[in-house]
Image 1: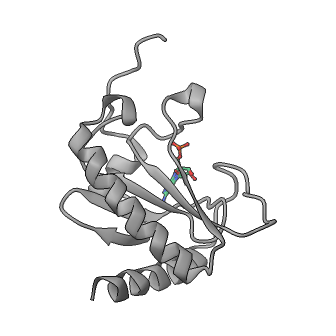
Image 2: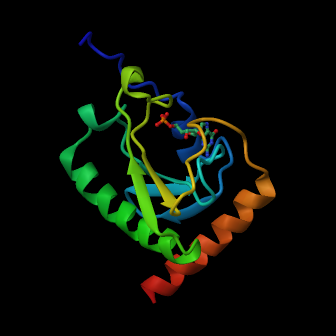
Length: 147
Ligand code: 5GP
């Protein structure tokens, strides 16, 4: 494999983390932010994004990964409840050959229903009001689970 490019802090998720670009946030802690994917592959598609800069799993600090997966679990449980999901799909791509398009480490967390196919990756932009309504429901479920 040719050596990947260095981390670029002008990527879209770095801008979202710095608050330079809006997002529908559903969770934040000291190390991690989670927000709605603007081109969801199914309703409720969330991205869990560590704050520490890394392109992907290949250059990430293991401690960052260890914490992030606990947030992925929290979000997966909330999505299962809110969307009455039959299952939850977790995906994470590393470098363009593997399908990665945004070069700041992130995990896709997507509710799945029996017999319903996923929409294409980075396909159609969702209506902002739909994303806002889904984000509100997920935030409420996360608040219930932590109380
Ligand atoms: P990757 O291909 O890198 O695994 O996934 C990048 C994801 O980011 C895609 O699912 C895409 O829909 C999503 N995405 C791209 N641009 C934006 C954006 O500006 N805001 C949000 N919330 N999601 C984005």
